[in-house]
Amino acid sequence: MITDETVSRIRSGDAIAIVWTVNDVIDATSHLNDETEEYENTLSVEQAREVLQYMLDSHDSEWGVNWETLMSAVDDLFPGWRKE
Image (cartoon, rainbow, N blue to C red; front, side, top):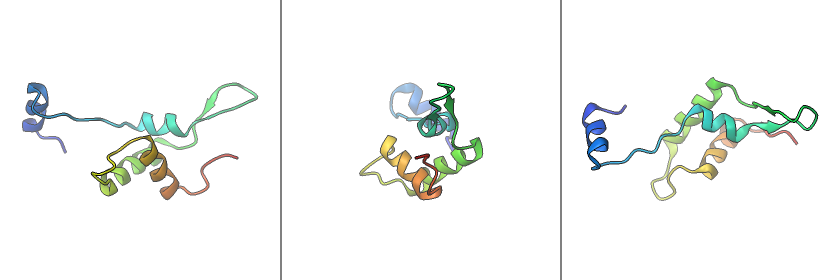
């Protein structure tokens, strides 16, 4: 949870916050349908929330949070999600 003090520190330039959203997770796991040429969502909003929470709970400060760790979290939580 971000406190008012943290928000104040971010606004003053004394802290930074990088925000990841459910849309980031859903976009990263969407697939292009070759027939319709439209992207199809693979994960639901609730599943994307699970991924974000998993990333928060298990992140390593040496690696941070990035696209690779996001995809690893998805693989850990939802094996077999990738369409082959």
